[in-house]
Amino acid sequence: MTQSITQGIEDPLLVVDHQGTSGNPALWLEQDGAAMAFMWWDQTNSLLNLGTPATNPIVSIQDNGTTTVQGSHDPLLVVNHQGASGNSAIWFEQDGSPMAFLWVDRSSGNFNIGLQSGLNPLIQIQPAGARFR
Image 1 (cartoon, rainbow, N blue to C red):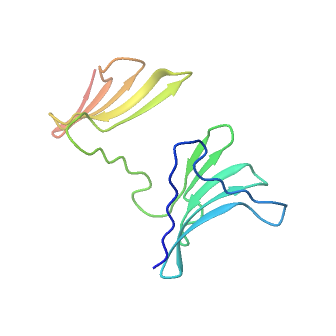
Image 2 (cartoon, rainbow, N blue to C red):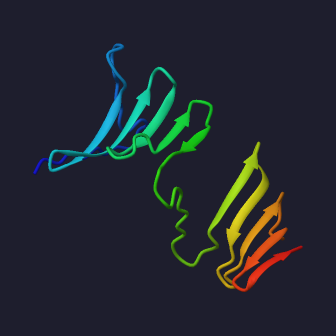
């Protein structure tokens, strides 16, 4: 078994420095010699891509911060909150200010949709049906 461990306290911890124009700098994860996952920089389109051999790429991050999630299987995006510290949520922000949010209230099981700051939902889907505020 070959193992490589990178440890340190300085930034950057790991650098992949691709020289020239022959390709895109990449990190590949393999198991038993088979490619399992990739992370690479698309020089032409200025994208950081994450993918697998089956779905290539799955996630693309543009140099302006825009993120695209692609796929052909359900679910396309999973938010998996672990532990009891809070509720599963997706927040939409602009310039650091909350603009809209989706969240599941662990105690009631309600799915909530809201706008701006605060936790008062505009739409609440309860296990028994929808309620609009």
